[in-house]
Length: 252
Image (cartoon, rainbow, N blue to C red; front, side):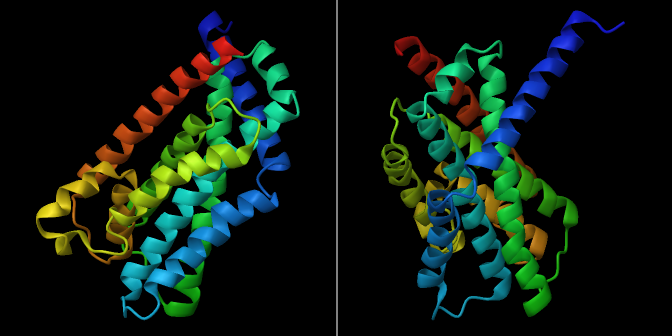
């Protein structure tokens, strides 16, 4: 006979997975998500990479990291305000589901979406340009942790009490764009001189670094440091996201 705690855990996970499937089916292939999560980072990367004669072992991990960063973090800010506007979010938070399951369900959706989108530049690099994966374990860990962490970041910003996804995306981009330029994608960390320490402030730094390690482009930090950095930021995003959503719910 299952214990009460095990039964509750299974029910919470089932609820989270149901929310994940619902979000993927309804929200993730909308024009706004495709624009902010896929097209925008790709064109941004191309605009800065073309003409700089960067090696493929630098370009492919950088493009993968950017697409994960923008795609995974764009899903929550598009889904939650839309559901507030449609009044379906009110029904969700009054259902017999814990706030943790609601946040986990939204985060898992972005995690899956970001991981799928990240595979596109990887497959192109392997099939068309002969890029080789030197460490499959590091690649899987890097994509998985980055997707989950950046999805949690988006869910955290989705706590902003608005029914307009554009309001959340505007605030999110105020953070994402500066982080993009201190992450070592466009300016190598070893070329920053005495200002290298600012890269620690960007969770994108660790995802770029671990993906470069996996594909063989050379990493700046150690694998353990990259994993620890992603883990710390993921926990912070999830914890603050939980607290902010609880605060928003208490004022609604």
